[in-house]
Image (cartoon, rainbow, N blue to C red; front, side, top):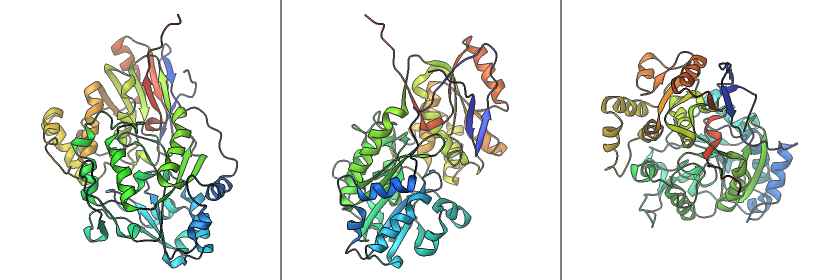
Length: 435
């Protein structure tokens, strides 16, 4: 699949690539999807024509309270388009505005506050009209214990504000997720508003090392199966699911029962996201998808994991990520320091016996996957010298020079370029010769 736009998403802009004259790039992008001409109209239509549920206007009738989950700042969800019409429908249905809560599903990420919260919500009317608050996974008294899952014994603690409300709605973006298969839907509930015990169980080596806990796979994926059991434990939940194109335009929206409406969005986006490639490459160049995903090194790891199926063993994966906000949590920093101190094998050995993973060390565990395949290089304009050291990957000061050096190293002028990083899933499929 040949392309001509030689640039990578980086921060709020793009990095142009200047390749050697003999380079033969294969540019891998999502298939083009038509943007919806009127996003708000499409959202209202989804409310009126839901998947496996009554319309939103009917759902709101007779309810005394509502809780709407939104993703945190690391996901470019178009909250500005749907929150107001959703809340207006609730108020028109008789739910008092003071009984409507917008809850930021932070998981174990930091809270979004101040100007960042205003950016996340995207509509001053919402901030003025209803409560907008953050989830705090470590505040144990704020969660309801729903008992362990039957299948794998995962402890289930969910934010009380969501469990105890009359009308529950999760909202989010459906895109590939390197552990849970796909983001959105049930994932916004758990780990989104789950307690730390639930999240740390999800992210233990028992789940992370399962070969079915990978991007774009829901069949037999232990994380997905636990999430389904958890949302059924909570009870009646609805979801608004969005799909965006590379320019962050809304291309699809579904609303309805949380499991069915999420699957409708997955079905829509799957074929355009998984890109079959007939060969592997010694040089793969990718990004962390730009802002907001490339704000931290923690999120950057996702872009290292998703393309490894097309990286030739022993090859070089070069990733560009601004890391404008730095490294990530102090727990992640500590995990990375342990990786550098112990090395990959000994680090992994410290994880396998744990029932509860330490906070954020799972992202370090995920970084081991591309490190097992080949050489990882990072181009960034962020991070301190010490932070760069504990990335445990090679830092390159010049992206173009790193690409040229990789092509020369293997004597192979072919390379794969993935401008949008982890939002595109390339898979190696050897094409059979025609009979």
